Image 1 (cartoon, rainbow, N blue to C red):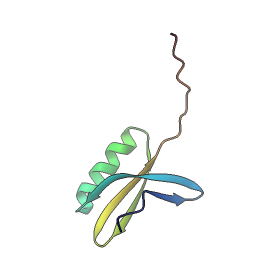
Image 2 (image 1 turned 90 degrees about the vertical axis):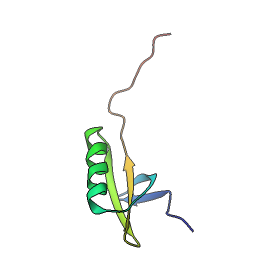
Image 3 (image 1 turned 30 degrees about the vertical axis):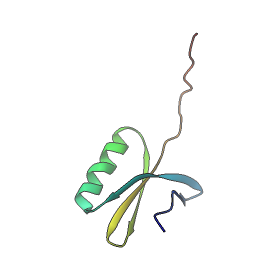
Amino acid sequence: MGPNLTTTSKGQKFMWDGRVVDTREECLRVVEEYQRDRFEVQVVEQDGKFLIYTRRVVREPVISST
């Protein structure tokens, strides 16, 4: 059985990004990229590997004029 596709923290749902990261250093680099793009991030360590879960709240609606 693979990793959970979602996790919950403080009542907020996070989605797994689909990667299994081998090292803490690589995990931190990926987390920083997500945070730069304004994602909230949760990291789960499982069997010595790192799983990254993210969520992003839409802060401004995008209105398309067609």
